[in-house]
Image (cartoon, rainbow, N blue to C red; front, side, top):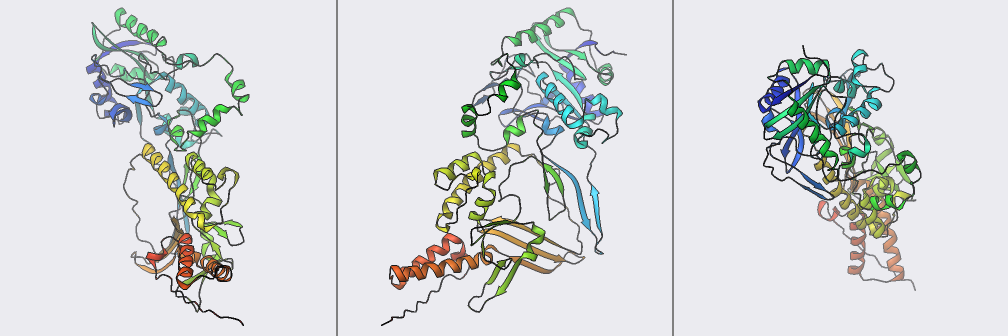
Length: 538
């Protein structure tokens, strides 16, 4: 029986047997592979998917994959992803609620059995990062987790703890650090000293291509016993140590030998932060890539009853509560489930459209309301655009009430949408299923989304067969109707009094006001029919 601390040597066939044994044991093997022009972490079906013969050239604003003649599998620095994507995923469903036809609400805790992961190619710096996650999210290392019941530790994130408890870590010591690596000055590499089940050091020389193996746990020893291997010879041991030692001199960067806590505490107002922030897209990639970040927020989806944790940072076009701007300039945001209690629609004699009020008053929805209520969630680039356009600083609560400037606000939102698209693309992980299977249930559900013109509300009642028996839609135009009419009335009166325009000029002026409120109204509904009655006093 192999003991903890024992060593051995695997050749390339032995590495293939390692991956095959892990998969045969029911584990999901995750490791580096070439994908989309980068070394990415992904599920491996075999060791043949490892990036044999590929290196990396990382630098500020640059990432390239050059070919290597030695055929090494791990001759690259840490890639653009971290293992946190698997241990602490961006989104996790915690519970869901369902209501029976009789009105009884059932809450179901969502704790699916996590995959039994085997991580192949964990760098020493990543091992240290995982140890930080263990301390913060699981209340301790996996040894302690193994003997504790889920939830026993007060600070424990049970989802993380379950995934971490079942993970098998195969470290690979670093022999080819990148131009942006600095683990030596942080004491986190390039060699691995603990926190692994097995540790590999890749050696490629005149003696051949092989992997020096060290055992770090009983489970690692058991696995190694099942693999084709040979005893570690002195030449391989020396070559492995020399390769790791040589990596020390290849570090591209170094952290200064200072007290980082004191340095950071004394630098809160340094200009450096403004420089970094000026280039920030608020894409969220730093949160995704950072192996130690553990920020989460809580999200509740009204339509499905899903209750989940997510990483923070969203503007009103994606999530949040209904956002409105009253005609008196005051702001209002309210929970979606109170929508029909607060919004009333009435028919008026002069219009075929429903006239909508909030708490008995007119209001304005759309870009101006979104900007006023949730502008602080815009991306850094969008905020800079808002400042440059003269809209004020969203971080300081800027409010724009001028409908003629709504086109500027919408332009700022387009910038945010591009930034957000880049973030979504960069963090996208295909779901297990492309859709949510919802069996027909006799019930009533509602939801809302932000269309360009503003809040769009839907409410449907279904019978047991899934047939819609009642529907209620409240479009943005109806909700903005009162504000539009009030503005047209004021503009027309002021124009006639001060400018004395002819009918064509007055019509154009009113049409321009309507389009600034609602840019889609001219093609989505019957447009303006203006009748001017002029009276002359003598």
